[in-house]
Length: 62
Ligand SMILES: [Zn+2]
Image (tube, rainbow, N blue to C red; front, side):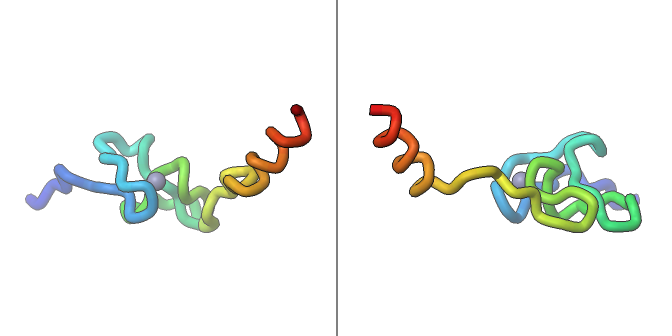
């Protein structure tokens, strides 16, 4: 009867209220530790470029 009401992503700390918000394991099951944006199919989602790289790009744009 224990319904997880307050699941918070261990990575970015966003609250996850729906199954769609949860990350997924390698076998396709739901991972309640991390959100979909952080953890997908058993791996941490690469958020793209780092802050340092962003700064470098800005400099290049100028
Ligand atoms: Zn997250």
